[in-house]
Image (cartoon, rainbow, N blue to C red):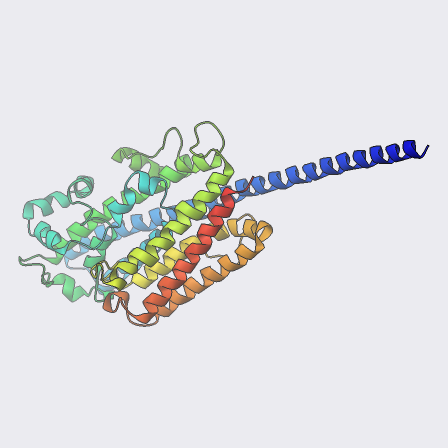
Amino acid sequence: MKKLLLSAVCLLTGMMTIVSCSDDDDDNEKKVSAEVEAIEGLARQYVQDVVFTTYTNLANQTSDLYDQLEEAKRKYRNNTLTQGDIDKICTTFLNARSYWEASEAFLYGPATTFGIDPHIDTWPLDLDALALSLSNSAQVAMLDNGDEGIAYAGAKLGQELLGFHGIEFILFRDGKNRTLASLMANESDPAFKSKVTGEEELIYATAVAGDLRDKCFQLEVAWRGESAAKAHQDRVEECEFETQIGSFFYGEHIFKATQAGSIYNSWQEVLVAIFDAGCSNIANEVANTKMGLAYTGEDPNYIESPYSKKSFVDFYDNVMSIKNSLYGGINLSTPAKKSAMDLLKTYNTPLAGSMEAAISGALAALQNCQAGTAFVDDPRAAKVKAAMDAINHLDEQLAAAATWASTIK
């Protein structure tokens, strides 16, 4: 009787163990499903509220920049250009520049695949080549020809004369907006040995701004597809620019992760890409290339935005692109409910805390840099090293997050 009772107890205990294990398995399955579902939700919000919004703003601002430069060229010829016109163009340029720099945490995808990043953001500007080009009347005439001039600029000038930094040289000098008097006179930079007029400079800047606009339209359409502005889609089609990778626009590759045709086989791969290919990539570049090459003396001339003296602003916007990507929105003070940071707070609280602290530390260090001497004037200052260290610390947290994301099941 005792033996039978013991057997019954053992059987009951075994059944309870089986039930308990079964319940644990169910809980684990629910947890895994919840994590993956959360990644899908944050990825969609990241694409729509961060990537799409940033690239649309960039496309609109570069379109305005081209229109304003085209109008400035006309006013120059009519002798009606004012300092107010120049100042307005400078503001539009800086707005466009800010949106571009705030997009650099998602340079993977179309910006890299279609070579858009080096096409519109190579530095330093080749001033000697620019001086030679603008002293060539036949080339200037080619640039001064509407859409054909834009196409000529994009195909013939080369990336050292294209994009933001060529336009920056025309619009800014020594950290200030170009003066009307300076633009109305002949170019005085020592690189210019031959006479070059302000009109010729505006012809060049306008054609390059048109090419910049078109490449930013391409970025927008390559991510958004048919949800991009119709006029932007039409212009990209007219330019015969590539906009799809395989059969999908890039946003679709993320939206359709795990499905046939997407480059992402799992939602975990999407999250790793956000942390690593996106955020970590730009953090490393800012600290060790954009700042590091000039700071160490390896390349003293590798100074981004030297004419407007906005290098530290560029770097700050780069880190903001990381924050926006992780917070799931533009310039948010707290993370959105569906965001990478929210996911970290839920499933890896210690890393979330260190990540937020690292973002704040990097931004504070770059704010401190902006308060003093411009980067171009003192790239080896102590504050530069402090900012580099803070950004590298952020990069360490991003690398940890990418590693963690790769282990999610």
